[in-house]
Length: 585
Image 1: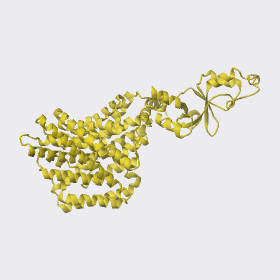
Image 2 (image 1 turned 60 degrees about the vertical axis):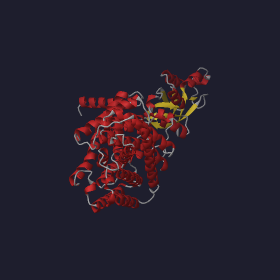
Image 3 (image 1 turned 90 degrees about the vertical axis):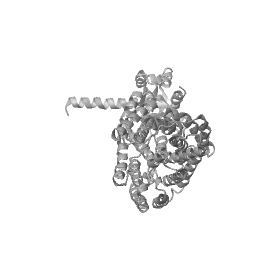
């Protein structure tokens, strides 16, 4: 290899290592924003591909567009559903039982318990499984799988670049925001959803990269799907402040629907111990039985939402579709189908809102009710209550309606729906409830959140020297001349650290035989506080360091790199005092 090329390769490797290490610090905003751009592009391409694999086959073979399940013969609809269930069974059997953990709950679990490292096998199962479900007409959403795919893209970027764990928290948020933006063309809602539901905190360091990723995801989606909007947007406003009391009533009814949605989903999850074949057969039977008479519940349901928006559906039909969509979607997703719940929540909320709007007009004919207004109100309330994301739901409705006048009444409905769902039905959101009832609850303590933001390299004390247990006076003076803070004793099976100041103080009153080099110094014999060390990887967060100290029965940790020799790989030392100082600062 030419020397010039070798030189540039070394410089590039050094730059990458420096970039990687800079992400350990909490203020690495430029670096995270650059990664947000990369993840936004990567995620946008994946979500565009995911949508094309669903939309193109349906557009080619359905009688009148991708959502025209209603125009198929009932027998054809049943055959599609059972065929999809069989193909899904074969695919998931091939992938193995561990790959069946998918969607938003899986993302939250891996983010908060595995530092955002998502297995590629589950990611692939979500991609193919979501396509199979939606092509065969199951009543599931596209946004849930998209969130998993976006988080998986961010995780893979982190793996490829060997990024520290503290940065992965934000990067997963970037992937989720880009996925929502590319899937539903709502970049602002993508950002808020990522921060509110996935990252679960609001910081400038977190917001800016997530915004960048969301913009890139939306840009790629709009470039490919220009002019193919799935929702009919209708200008709508609240006619009078007299309607405000009805907003409260709407919120209560929406909370009832959201409570039913979450309860059915959790009930179905209790059947997860059944064999996969039995669960898929039950899901196919439930979906087919309802779809035989009510095909509007099949697929994404955006055509049904559009009909509700334009006032084409009557009161009874809206209520029936709402109830059927809630029952079928919540139950089938709970049984383990790799689909999402956000889309079904939007459709069922739209139908319920539309029905309530017609009821208001029937009771008070003098009020001119806009169907699309109550449809959007229902969408916002149901999404907010089901996934416990009030701000994301509000922003989503604002982006879909392009109408700021809807914010005021939507806020009232969302507040009533969320409070009622949380304190009357005792549900904290469907994703949190799914994890709780599957034995994987989240630990969201403030201290844990704070310590996860920084990597061990940003706090560790690098002023250390690895020494042997015994040394003579001259060796001790040479070591102390380098001004270390710590001496790490290389003594199997564990490393022990003591402060260099203790050795310096002892040397001032050292015995004559030590000064005359007739006797060696035993570092375990001098008076000093000794810390038992355990190892932690340089990619770890401060939270992982705290766990290593408390669970590893050690007093401190040493930060190890990826070099072959541990002596050379020891990059720094981290004590409980370092963690306390960081947290309190």
